[in-house]
Length: 150
Image (cartoon, rainbow, N blue to C red; front, side, top):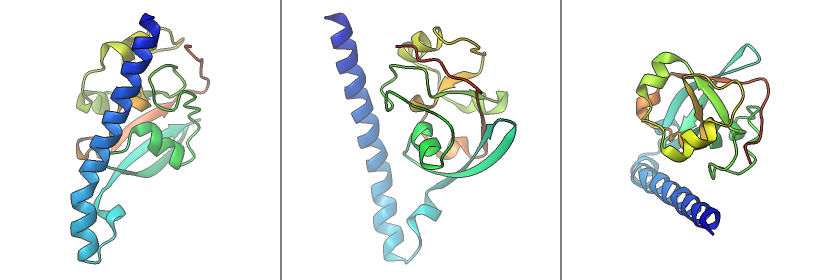
């Protein structure tokens, strides 16, 4: 019964994050399209993913999660649970400068991170990181292997 309640809470938090992301986009969509400016250009945040030693510069959209950005850019994050913070397949490792910019991880995320082999001090779950202007130029390393914490 507790597990069911936790899953329900996670799903609610996920929907709240999605709605917040959509609300962040709405003023930009209205203002920028009326001026003829591409909305993607106005809301783009540059992020670097390092996968198997190769750096890939990606334009992320503010309001999306890092996991959504990675999947849209064909970065090798399995993200099995779809952003519900139930597995660890969207595990990324932030460089120290990026990690200092990120908000603290919530208890749920820390519980999942505790189950991962090879976790580092700057490890995070990409599904729990919202793309904002604050993380412009952020650098995330994608681990070579993933383990599902479920």
